[in-house]
Image 1 (cartoon, one colour):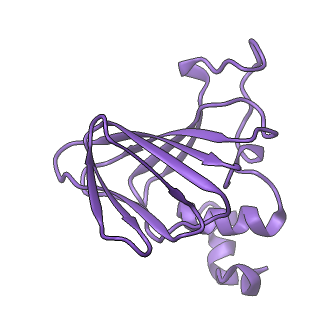
Image 2 (cartoon, rainbow, N blue to C red):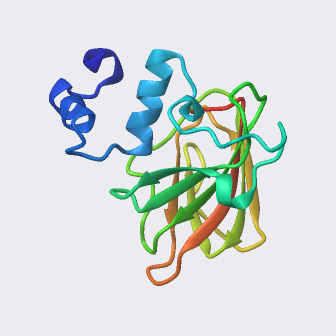
Length: 161
């Protein structure tokens, strides 16, 4: 597994023992290796209704090393899309580029997003701006502000994690 995911066995051992955090990029490689969804790893809320996720029941993936909180905004793992709310700390961002099959849509709710997509110039998006691209191209999200948090909606189709 370590060789196929390009994640060292010693690092995986530290994560298993709770002695190290894992970045979203590395977690994505592990999820791909096992053929599961990120939502399979998160506790499921009590289903009030199959298609409703209350704000206090959104499943959270916290990545303190990257300064990112990712909230999964849809119940179930058998969806055609995966909707997420990302909250990125000032000056923080993904530790490594993401890439996965399908398409990705992002919409900035608050703050300024520095979006880097392979093959195009780095762009800055402000609140109200959106971007849509083929997610097989390597891409990175960064908070362009060193003083304000960034909040954005990200939708992957099909689910990437």
